Length: 268
Image (tube, rainbow, N blue to C red; front, top):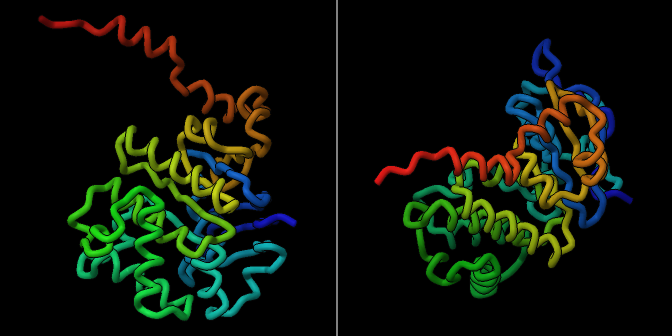
């Protein structure tokens, strides 16, 4: 049974259909990349999975987690699933933490919502999670968000998202606001945690380079529709849709980089 199954999902806002008949499945432990340009409907689709969209949006089709329809759940049941079964990492990682609470306070409240542990157990669980993403557990636990760098905050957000070992991690453009070196470390960290916890990853991105490196399966989205979905090898080496081929052709090659360097004028 698939961890996540989306069938004929359409998302409507007032009289407009923003996402049309989207279907794909994610298997256990699979890294599934949903790629496309800004405005293609990727983040709307990701938000619909956890029912994070406002009441102004309506849906048709189905979304199931391990065979359970998410559209049939009550608000309380959805709250229990978010965090325990489905977790999110967002592009704006700063929104995960209010500057008025320490990082530890955020973790403590999150754990209290889902588990019956005493204060000492909650603290130990939080610091262990922070250390698992290569942060200094005790120091970060006592810190405020404004005392940390962007890369450290994103690591803390990942630790929070993975705290309860969810079945599905939805990473919505998690590296857009980070520099290339930090982005590489964050993606390698997600990959490491995926292997260790056997969770599935839905990776939302506009950058096919990241999908090419980490994904097992790629779905290409354009103007609210999935135009192509296949194993990574098939997408990369035998794209069927012209738009996919266009995205692939836009990826710089090593020869492109060498050529660019050769044309740089060196000033002494």
